[in-house]
Image (cartoon, rainbow, N blue to C red):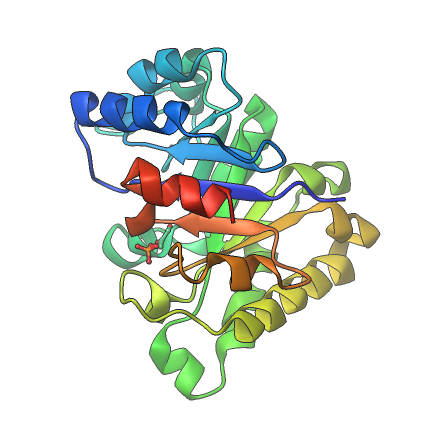
Length: 247
Ligand code: 13P
């Protein structure tokens, strides 16, 4: 059985005091204990959010990291720095990083390897643009992203990886993939992983992301292959985020 995982990606939102306010509110709401809850917060909030979630089952995530342990990489954050704070998860290859910050499959792959080596669970984002979907290239694109991200990964590490299928046209647009479209792609991702790594693909969790809201979450989570959600906008309010966890 795969444990459902609902992760909030705050993106570039919330200063420290706003972050702590949200976490306090979230802690005060009854949450489904069968769901793994993750908060992927800006680097500047990691330390304080970590102390605020101490003693709860809420996990901490970062939104990016460098693949090297240290060095002359101005403005970057290393996996060891994340480890020191006690970060559990790291989002890698988010479409916004691919789109605005030159993230490519090769760097995602390096980061995935380093994360696994350091004991941080990667949440690898994949997904096609609207143009790619309109010319029926979505599976080709997603297959390439998945296989490149997982190149050279040990079969025994596959179960530690989370993949988030986030069609770019559904991010922040209010337009979600239909739950069956999302499930179809997520099944395809699992088959792709199975083709390369075998049956461990059944232990890997695959989330859907893109305009997941309290009013559509239960339909999405009812699908056979969708193991959770990576949530932007609706993770910025404790009440909404808790509704997602309690789908
Ligand atoms: P929204 O939920 O705001 O569409 O964002 C999705 C996303 O990019 C999560 O990583």
